[in-house]
Amino acid sequence: MVAIQDTVVLTRMGHESRRGEVDDSIKAVLCEQLGLKNVYDMNNDSIEGCCDGGDVLYTGRHLFVGITDRTNQVGFQYLRNVFAHHHDMMDAADVVPIPMMSLQGADSGGGVLHLKSAVTHIDEETLLIPEGTFGDILAEAMKVTERGYTAVRLPDVLSCNAVVVNGHVMAQDSPCSVSKQRIEQACHERDLGLTFVDTSELAKKDAALTCCSVLLKVLDLNSNQLSGPIPSQLGQLRRLLELDLSSNQLSGPIPSQLGQLSQLEVLDLNSNQLSGPIPSQLGQLVELDKGVSLLKSREQHTNYLNTLRQHIPINKLICLPPLESHPDCLFVEDTMVAIQDTVVLTRMGHESRRGEVDDSIKSVLCEQLGLKNVYDMNNDSIEGCCDGGDVLYTGRHLFVGITDRTNQVGFQYLRNVFAHHYDMMDVADVVPIPMMSLQGADSGGGVLHLKSAVTHIDEETLLIPEGTFGDILAEAMKVTERGYTAVRLPDVLSCNAVVVNGHVMAQDSPCCVSKRRIEQACHERDLGLTFVDTSELAKKDAALTCCSVLLSV
Image (cartoon, rainbow, N blue to C red):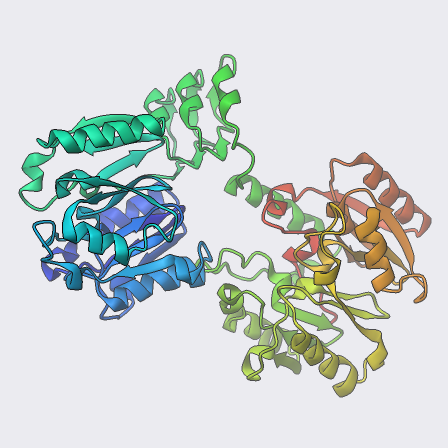
């Protein structure tokens, strides 16, 4: 397999005799035991591509893929599609093919089985590469200097394979003393821990240190009826980003060793029977709360739906099925723009999200709801793009933010449908807002979509942030000239609200000033009000309006 963050590609190995190793036991560990959602199986996708994980080196900045007897161009392209195009973890230019077969045989360093048999990294800046002509050619093919790497050159190829686990290097206990001295010096200069491990017997079968492990980053064991103490050994999994042990029967103290998980972003121990003080060592986990907790996200989304149900007849609330291959599918607002009985299915600005506009959405609109006026921007062969989060319909105007996700062609498509074709409004009432030229005015800038910064609570009233950014935005929208009242709020997050049948769902912001001003505005307009917490989703640029589309049918 090839694993980066929480995304895994199960490989179709180059030697046919090994393909049975990718079996149900591996899939069960990844999908059931670890709870990973982004698991791709190259074996199921009917391609002629092949790839061995030993040919794939991810340094944290580049994904180098060796083209060898075991990994071909089709396998390389599959990896590029998953990690660069689909999940946008890196630019396509950072997924780099290395033509190993044309490099082989340059000297005794040639003839290696996999790319990582000849090169690995010990940090994001430093590569271990063999000396000699083969190493020179390999370094040139990888553009080591040009890409900002330092090469530690070693006399023997075997020593060039190392495993790095949370700042600790496991290097080959090679008989070559020069290689060991150079690795020791490199680790000392970079403040890296070092252990020499002897796998010389495995090396007789072309095995290297990296062959024998895949580094774990997500461990999700929630609701597994686990009991007893939390194992202190979990503190050794130092590349973990997320640890979820919630909803079990775990007891006893929280082990202080969890404080060694320096990269941990999410730690969920909720709903157990733990006792004793919280270890002070957990205070060292500076990355905590920067990640998104799956459990909290689900809880907040459930509360969001329950609030909607209080103001929409139960048979009128439709929940779409999740799309496992599209983690942003929760943000359904971006898939369409709906006014009265007319809907435009959008061609979203980020290519990886366009698969979210699928048959399930079309079936709901056309068959279940019987809508006739449904336009699909994806089918009309245009270069336009639009995210629904950039489109604000107040009942009098259709404001369209021109952003990284919505361009002028997308704006013109909406104007043609709603103003020219259906005559729902005058052309002048479909208004482009040049958000990219407004960004960065102050801390209010940098929002992803127009509705991240402005929404309405009735046809006369807009929520707009305070500060220079809010001033420029209000001027661009001609708020006063068009007869709107602006309720100015200190925090941008509070400026996004959903209005359902005279009831406002506002963000349960930590900013008490924003909440008081929204309460006053709703009271003066005789509007109902509920504060809803979606703070966990907001870590991924999600706002209240992102999670629903309101249709008039």
